Length: 417
Image (cartoon, rainbow, N blue to C red; front, side):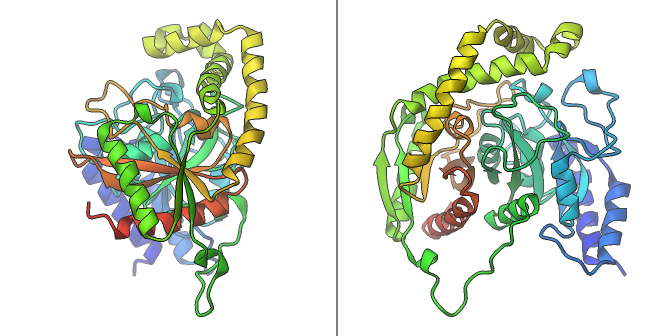
């Protein structure tokens, strides 16, 4: 008789076989290995937080025995010998690795083959394109991504799923093709905030607290305190502006204390400094590819590598110094509430596959090393997902996840599509 884990994997593999030819979310699928692992788990009585869950892994993260191609022909024959640390943690928590999800070229902004499952004529975002699409289409309930600017939050918003980028450094990065040692953060795509909490527990060893029953829970009884950050709202389109206003009304009606604020100059500096740091470190991390494999790189990433290599060292160091001060200021400011609320993107996914979208609303959390989570509640006039993100205090990820769970429940209770 087929066990629960094996049944789950059989179902996921069937979905992949049926849907992926049109979506292109996967770079590599290990059907035999996934089924074997599922049968093993069906025979064990030890259940971790990810027990039996099918997971996709962004193809810049090593999984032993699988290729790590990084979205480029340069690494077409690259086979990983060992699991990345985060993959090993997932397996220890009971996860079943189904395969590798497609990424943009070297996790940059040059689009990949992946299409948006919500509407194939629209971008899925990037660089974690395949991971977002695999979860959005129901092929797997969870997939790993990484974020250097907006590569978790924005694809999650475009594809209509939960995307969680934890505090920088929370999840170890051993075994990952890095682009920026100062910014790269391992994140996750899920269908629910609850599954994001399970992933957090698997990555950190935290013990998930059961939902309170009977006696009132003090933290849950206190009204949420949400601060809407108005900086950058001139980049939001009409649909997104309406979504922010509807969220504010819904949260207020649900008992939350909602206010607006315009953050000081740290926001403008974070936009500028994130790009300086990312490009300078990208040029350094990809110096071998840039020097020896130019003919196998796209014009788009070559332009970024050339730009990054030309950044003066003193400009790069100045940007690093400014971010140190900005993070301290941000810790104080966000600590005055439960979370900041901002758009996850300028609007719904752009039509066509020529762009992965604008990370203008993502750089703040990434640069300041703050945890962020996309909440997929609203839709545009064309019925495409509109994501709103909550941003929390550094190293207060559990608080952010709990806030997100309450906020999304409130918003969905007053939303009809």
